[in-house]
Image (tube, rainbow, N blue to C red; front, top):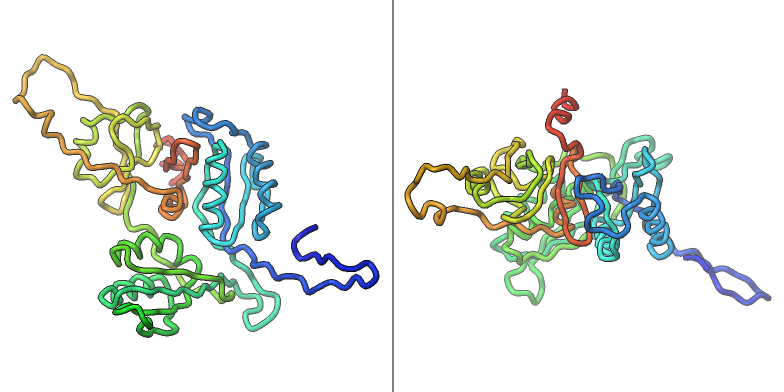
Length: 328
């Protein structure tokens, strides 16, 4: 028995109208893990094992779609929003699977009929936000900057000074919004969204404003190296973590990517320095990011490495020389 089937009397087998299932609105590329640390932490790492698990998920996830990618090690997985795909990834991770995923993208369509026939259309979602009145301007600025249009705004009944706002917003604008919304409202906003319709493209949506810090060598992170990079931004790693060349270890304070050596150690020479200098090292606490936050954070040329023990960010092309050649 499949979704939409009707169990009926054999004498009068009349089927009920089929339930309409929401179409996927976002797609991601699942890949076999090919990082230098591949196979160390996961139990299932091959493309056949990953594909079998995705095929099994199709039996219970009615809005999930799985297609073969360009190579034999890639699969295009489409789902109903970031949470849908994030739950699938987290489940696979806990079951012992090891893989890499690319940046989520919205699914665009060209309708064959209707008012927008032949035009490139994107999914438009209804966004509902409840926030304190003092955070109203911050929420409005954040949402409208992502091509949203306000539908209504009223005081929320029985909720004190909270404001109830409704918007229509492109699905592209929702990628990465959750973290920024919580930051702008000190975690006091409540938001949810659902698919409304397809409309022509509304224009460009702002991307990540900051660059990243990329590891230049493979090894163990040292406190001495992080102390030297203190004013360059914040980090996703801490002393003692193992990193590899091409891994994203932090966010740069400017809008460009930089290369840094996080495994650099202090030279043990005979030169004496003032006592206590090593005790005054400044090391920023590592910023821990969830799987969903990592999926929202990465750019088009980056991947999220998902293993049962760790979640790492990396560049698609690990070697700096190869990245420069690709850019040219």
